[in-house]
Length: 114
Length: 111
Image (cartoon, chains in turn orange, brown):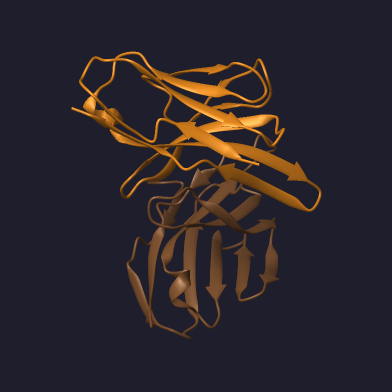
């Protein structure tokens, strides 16, 4: 069981370049999330997907697009990268039942935009 | 003003000490409260989850929620060097579970 996997682990881009961050889960969870983490800012929600075929904006969606390809995969795309998008990006899935409520996070992608 | 405020630390304590970590929030609609632990260069992992007000205990960890004061706490008893990490509080108002995170408190437990 890999849980939540993210690729790539590290990436350096030049301003204006595009790239897609990949996330996959084998936990059979419906909900998936993309966060960014910046020093002193905690984690901020970029986009989330409550189920396959649906996506919704979070707190900081500008400059990003997402695709919920199927139940397992949720990708984040930067069309024209900017230095302000230098951050650590985390993908997460969500499990809810009567006795627990948990988000499982991937290992993160460290992105630098020059 | 941020919706969730958390002292960034760092907080340095000797091994065996009782640690108190806190968050305050402004949105009275928050009902779901969580504490995550994040080791350096890793993703966050859930430590404690509390719905609405009250206390919850799990081993050396106790989470408290005071909705009247908009204040949540995490206590760690008999702290260990392995507890050294950043602790993030997180909250949500509804079943979509869009979490709002605090900025995290860095904890160092000295042997």
